Length: 139
Length: 139
DNA sequence: CAGCATCCTTTGCGATACTG
DNA sequence: CAGTATCGCAAAGGATGCTG
Image (cartoon, chains in turn yellow, blue, brown, red):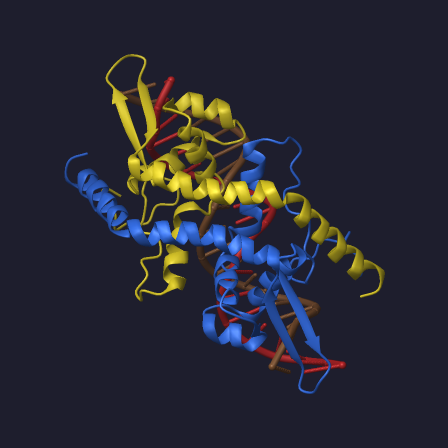
């Protein structure tokens, strides 16, 4: 368990996600998803976008997250070079998390999507209602 | 199983994803993830970005996808108003899928992320190598 | 061709208890 | 405070077989 060869389910062992062979769009999207398409990464990035946080601060701000998933998410982001982890050798321990330049660049791209979502929420809701109505009434 | 009340695991029954109560960023991100953060949605949207496709064409172009997941993904996107599904009453059957205007708008936002990913692949790969090296050599 | 239904495996995640 | 280790469940997704 000391090296990366052994697969561990829960320990802080961040395996190489979908190392994609060919250089297709499919690959890039898979890459993107591996990095962001989990339950918490985007949210953590967004929060860190407004400034450095300690572990517990993040935990409080999200609070539906378990410490396990917060740790896992942060390690994942750290590994990808999106956030920095700074440990202060004090008691009680203090660890700060912040976005890197790379992470801030990604945040910008993410904001584009968030903005789009915000702008088109109603249209999507309407589409859903229409779809559901259509298939429950007749077919 | 005829209406939407019964939860079915595999049938084409697209339940309301995370209907979020409060109107926070957290909510919007959850919404965004519910729509895009599965294994195939982004890829399908990208493909349809270059033109209408039939079911089988999509299946061929992705080909690691199962028909089940392709169907599920398309229904999901259709329900959200991102793609249209056009059935031609011919034998053998023919069904065309295409992006809606809404879907094309989303595609633009997605392209931003894909572009970012493409531009920073190397940095991320380097960050990973560094991280892994650091933690396997000393700590 | 374009699905639907069923079974089964895998993965993600939460809950909980423990530690430097 | 900031984690780590283990357990267990639920949801996602794959494989296969059947149908109009």
